Length: 242
Image (cartoon, rainbow, N blue to C red; front, side, top):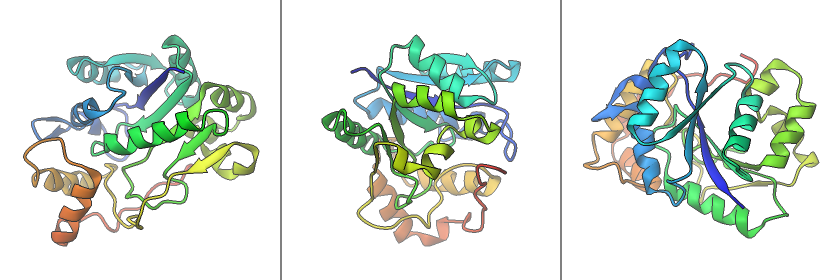
């Protein structure tokens, strides 16, 4: 079973345009994320999925600078973008990440992949972000190619095709579905980048670490010791239909 990490990323963000290319440490937001993924066991199977729009030539440039392959597809139909990329790279199992989560912890990804493979045939969709216990920004979704093919057939509403997982979240009983819980509830923390407040908060967070190889637990411990660093508590997270 071939497993790959597919990261959706684009320059055309509505709330913070061009965010993935903003300076972040000694690189960019997307660059930082890609460097952290080099600590994953799947580091050789990472692909950035972006759009065919000219503005995303920059996205491709950042990915290739980090030695990561790029697939370009539909802007709004993410089901098709993921499906075509998965087939091009011969993936049986897809780890879905988003490019606005630069602090994602490879240990979480690897642990979830191990569970998925151990339970092969008994699970087709595995996530840590429906009943949220991890901080927002540690979002990982793992699913089979066959599940993605099912969604391609049954999802017709624009928001279902853009966000891929709403149908699964609304109909978990139809799928071999499992959740990956955190050992504590950190859902109050936002460690993703949608707004300038998020950006400033995460820049402050990484300034506490001398390298990019810090864990999720290191990050939460640092925040708890320095609570004033969090300046994005009031940021509203957009719903699928917004």
